[in-house]
Image (cartoon, rainbow, N blue to C red):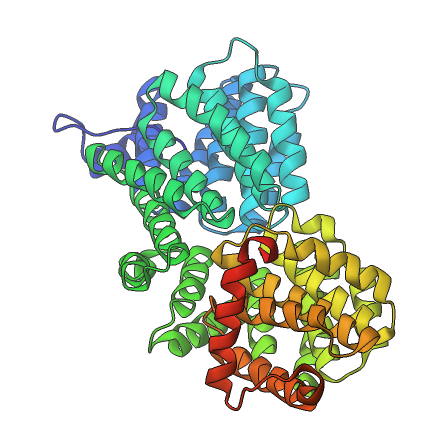
Length: 501
């Protein structure tokens, strides 16, 4: 995780350093252990790196250098975290706790708390991670170096992102980038740019995301990075391309790194490959599922279970979703819990069990969706649909009207189309086949025509044509085919498009 660089043709070989760790004395031995640990870390040999740092801590404690011992434990924690050896992280934590009344340097506690925070973040304990990164900040002096402040801010931004607070995270990354540029910490600048790019994708700012990840790539080519940094940029690049709909480029980026990754990022990358809409999607999803299940990687397994449930019949999906929700509650994973509840509500609606759907939606905390507009829109569409079926038209109309006023960018079009359809349903049920009903229905079809959801478009056109045919005597609409109806809607929408959008 650190941004140190080593190397040089005049440096001793590994064999020489190993010999010095066994037979050297004093500073010669500790220097050999530090160099070896750094080399192991940058070769992704995290277990050896961590073990060396733990040995180094023992040496420092023997010599009475407790602050140096704590810094070595911080680095051991970072390496065990990268190796996903969480039991070892906790064993090191017990050793660090034993130094509380012996190590007094603010720098050493800042380093340890930051390392533990990152390990907690990596294993999905995000609340714990946020607590420890705040502890690290408490030990960071106002005059701390630009590099150290940038590192802490970068970590905090990554942790805040997991709570869905994307705009807040982006602001923190902006501060981090300023400090990192001030320190000319190129690897850290690259990391911040890559993370910022992924957030811009989630905020639907594809062009800004491409600019950020392009700068990260350019800097990467100049700095001879260690593998983990190259992997993070590759993942960000794939995510940006996927967000921009450039599926071939996304596949190339993800496939270039997937075989080299440790377990957690490997599963995450396989999931992204399964989302790339190509002929190997099912294969990648299956590989991700097997690996997540075999390694008890619960948050990613839950994500995959939710994806599978979305595609399954309601009767099969509901027991799976109940299990996912129970598991998410057990692990205090609010994000997964509420994502599963959205799908569960959808499946109850599919079964026409609207009281059950409302019960599920009432348990959802929309605040957990943060700045993820797609989840917010999904929640509001489902809530309005359920309210209509339960006869609460006042709140349903209020929600749907708010959704129709969204900026009509492509990612929102389907939600906007649903909202117009819901308003047309309310109007038809209340007042019959009025001109306002027809206007709202036509607006829904026009927005839906901008999406790739052609089956739903055809279904809505058929439904609208049926109702129009029933009302033809009153409205005198001489339309005989679906294609003629769609042409008529386009013509009409051109006249009131500004108002409808």
